[in-house]
Length: 119
Image (cartoon, rainbow, N blue to C red; front, side):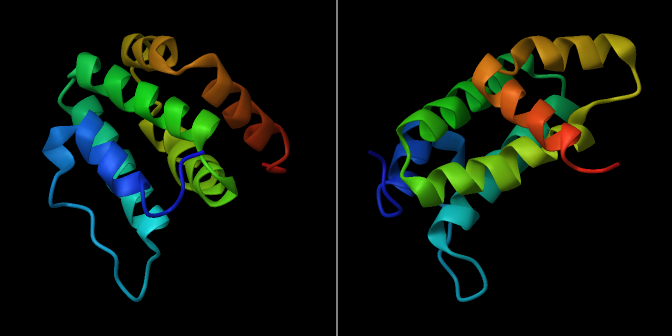
């Protein structure tokens, strides 16, 4: 099980571009800081239309969700997956591309969030 202290190292190993961009600070736990960095990286790559990098971020998030402790799983659900709505472009082709990159396990969580959001 991936714990809080292992999380930054695993993410930096999987996505070397994030090395040095994950900080533990008083306003944010290391888990939240790490998942925020992963989310921001994925969003940036989506804007650049670097779908290979987005797919890699999705795979890392799925791995963290499946192998993480409860704090890691909670952060993936409430930070990373919750951000999918802001990544779903109005451009139907980009939306289709993004949806094809989201692993089924994370997409299921996203749908569950949307169904229970009362929006």
